[in-house]
Length: 157
Image (tube, rainbow, N blue to C red; front, top):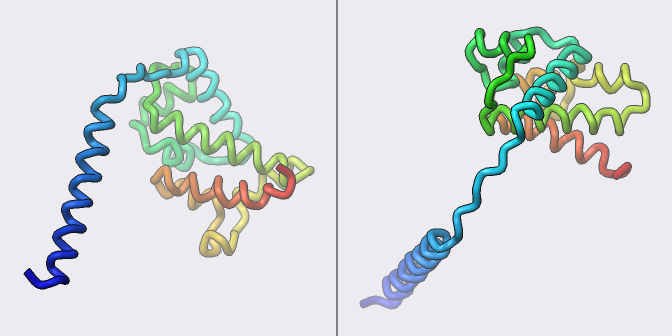
């Protein structure tokens, strides 16, 4: 067998071995029960989300997109305070929004500046407002805005 093919075959064997070891190790880990916030805490998280949306003057369609586009009926039930079990994705999205809001409060001493930042065009987001990026639909869009704000506030951390 030529030397190049021999090295390639050896690399494939190493990769397969590493994957098999990883899979074996993962299968041997004890199952950890999923820890979820209580229904009361989930309801409070949703109240907080809608409070932030109100401060930012976000319309219902945009708020719904930020939450991952739940069915309209579900969205308006949540807005009325009728919150059942929330998905991990929805909780993650609420967490990003809360983190963005808190970081803006740290960066800007004036609450009006903090609350209006979300609607102002920003070169870092291709000239669009951060709110537009957040409402693009994917949780990674929320993460991108959160990361941008976290970098901006890092001197105060």
